[in-house]
Image (cartoon, rainbow, N blue to C red; front, side, top):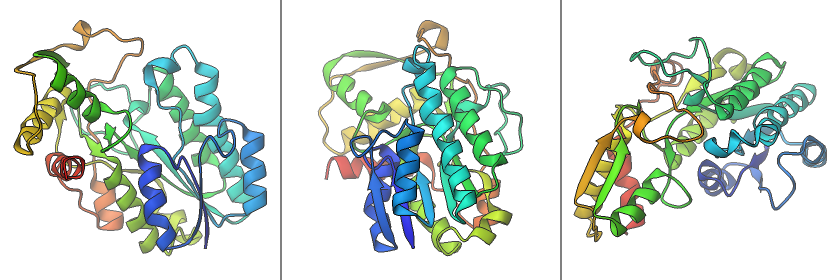
Length: 296
C-alpha cells in the first residue's frame, strides 16, 4: 500500500507522518518538497509516486489572511483537492480529505449533521467548502473528515497562544459567544488511522458506502473563554508558571477580526459512532493529554 500524505509539517499531518509508516509505504510531503498550491506540481507528484491512497492534510488555514488572499486560499483548499480527487478516480485510488466547521453559517444552537445546508460566512470557509464539493462530486472513493477548533502541543494554535499570553499578562479577554469542541490534532490523526485500518486502508468499495462527509471532533462543547479557562487550570496543575489572574469573557463584537467566525460550531458525532463504532473522548480529557505532552 502506497500512501501520499500532504501537509507533513501541519498539525494533523505531523501526527499522521509519525503514525502511518508503521502501516504502509508512506511518502509524506510539505511545501518545501513542492508547491502544494500548484495543481501542476501536485499532479506531477501523483503521477510519479502513483499512490493507492492520498491523504490531504495540507490546507491554507490562516482564516483572517484568507480574506485578502482569496486566490491562494482557493488554489490550495479547492483546486488542489479537485485535482487529487480526479486523479484518484482515474487511477483507482482513494482520497482522505479534511474539512472544517467553518463551512456552516453558525446559526442556531443544535449540533450540525453532515447533511445540513452549508453556507460559509468567510473566505476560508468558502474555499474549504469548494474543495469538499469538488471531492464529493468526483468519481473518486473518498472520505472527508470534518473537524473543528484544531490545536496541538506545537505549532501556532489557540492553546499555544493562551499559554504564551497567560505567562505575560495579568488580564486577558477571550470570546465567550462562539461554541464548539476543541479537538487535538493527535486525536484526528489517530481516528484517521483507526478508520483506515477498519477499511483495509481506504478500501475503495468500503468508502463507496461509508465514505463522504463524517464529523470528527472531541465530544462535549465549550466557548473559547471556557477553553482558555480549562487551559490555565490544567496548566497550573502541571506546574506551569502563569501571570494571568483575570480572564474576562467578551462578545465577538468586542473582538473584531477581518473574518467573521460562526457562533455555533457544534458538530454531531452520530455518524462517526454508527458507521465506524468510534466514540470520541471529551474535549477536556484530550486537553489534559496534550498538556501532559507539553509539560512532560
